Amino acid sequence: MSRRPAIVTQADVARTIRAAKQAGAVNVEVRPDGTLLVHLDKSTVPLSQSEKIEHKREIVL
Image 1: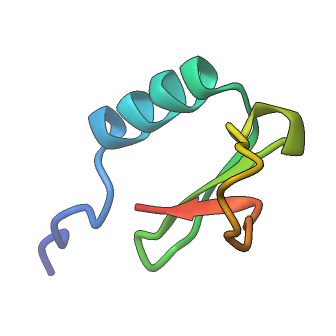
Image 2: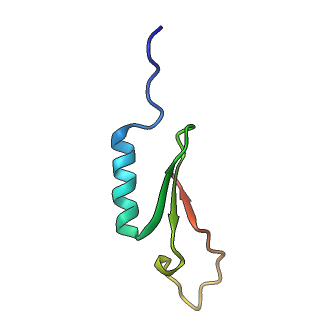
Image 3: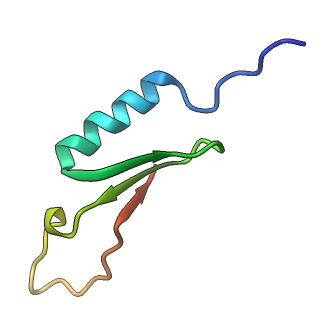
């Protein structure tokens, strides 16, 4: 039986971690289904008093 292709490649993970570090992420999570989650700290999310949006602590790529 041959191997199946990777859902997430090592290059995908490396790019995600580099981008997350630049954004000030606290944690990066790679799930078996290929979902990459980047958890941000509240202090790194740009805020404006005129913006009334709900802030989430993760980015799904």
